[in-house]
Amino acid sequence: MDYVSRRQRLRTQLETTDAEALLVTHDINVRYLTGFTGDSTYLLMHRDGTLLLSDRRYETQLQQQCEEIPAMVRGPERTMQQLLQQAIAEVAAGQRIGLEADHVSWNQQRQLAESGSGATWVATSGLVESIRAIKDEAELAILRRAVWIAERTFEGLRAQLRPGWTERQMAHEVEALMRRLGASGCGFDPILAVDANAALPHAQPGEQCLDRAAVLLVDWGAKHQGYTSDLTRTLSIGPPSDRYRQVYEVVLEAQQAAIERLAPDVPFSEVDAAARDVIKSAGFGDYFGHGLGHGIGLEVHEQPRIASVSQGRLQAGMVVTVEPGIYLPGEFGVRIEDDVLITPEGHEVLSELPKGLEACTVIL
Image 1 (cartoon, rainbow, N blue to C red):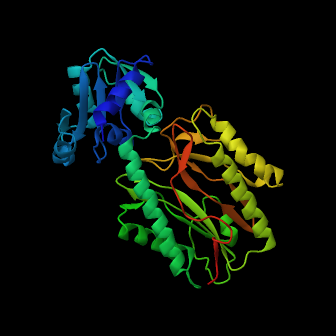
Image 2: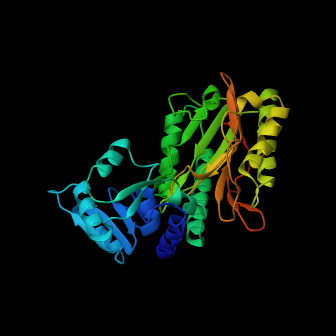
Image 3: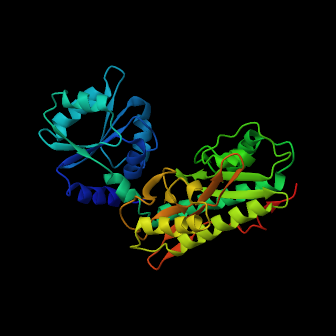
C-alpha cells in the first residue's frame, strides 16, 4: 500500500478547502492513510508534516506499522484531548485545522472549540472518502480475493443446504466457511432470509426453517485484509412458482441493464434509472425501495452511492455493487447483487457466481 501517495493526494484535496491542516479521527480513514489497524488514534496532518496521536496500548504496534510517521503517545494520566492540545501547540499553533465533520460528535466539536489551543477549527466533509472511492492496484488485488472467498463460501453453503436448518444456523455456517477459506470474518452481518423474511431488505436471521421454504435470500461478504466484498443471490427452494419466476426474471433484467451502463463519466442517477425503469415497466416500481448500489472497500458502504438522487459520475477505479430488488410484503423478496470494477474502457464484473433462474434453483 502506498500510504505516502495517499497522504499527498489528501494534501491536494485539502488545498480546495479553507483549512491548512486536518485532524483525521475516523479509524477507517486513519488506517487508509497510514496502515495502522488499531483504534482510538488520530492523524494530524499539519503544514509541515504528519503526526499520529495515540496511547500506550498501541506504542509497539505504531512502531511496527507506521515507523515512518512521528507519533505522540499518552499514558493513562492524560486524556486524548490533552495530548491533542500539546500536539497543536507544538506543530500547528494558529493554523486553521479541518475536522471530519461526518465523524466528529457535537460534544467533541465543543471540547475542541473550548480547548484554548489557539487553532481555528474548520468543518470538512468527505475528503478522505473521496480518495478512498478510487481503488489502487493493491486494493483491487485484495478485493478480488475477498470476492473469491465469498463465492467459495456460497458454493459451500449451497452444497450443505438441508431441511431443518434455520436462518441463524445458515448465517453461522457462512461465517465459519469464510474463516476456513482465509477471511478474517464477515464484512457485515450476513442476511439469510426465508420466504416472507426475504421481503425485508435488511432481515436479521432468526428461527425460520428451510423445511417448507420456497425462497432463500443470501446477502453476504467476506472481509480480507480489511476489505470486504458484498454479494447477494436468491435461491428458489424447489421448482419456482410462476409468480416467483416473473419477479426473478425482472430483477435479473434490471441488474443486467444497470451493469451495461457502468462506465467512466456516466452519472450515478442514470445507472440507477436503468434498473429502476425495468422494474417500473414490469409493474413493481413500488416494491424497489432502496438505491441501486454503493462503493465497497474498507467499509461495506462507502462512496459512491448509486441512487436516483446521487450527484456525480462514475470514475475508473471505483468498485461498486449493483443490487436491484423487488420485495413483496408477506410473500418473498428477490435481490441479485454483484461487485463491479469501473475500468477506463467500461467495467469488469468481479463476481462470477451463476445467477440465472435455473442455476439458482435448489431441490433439497
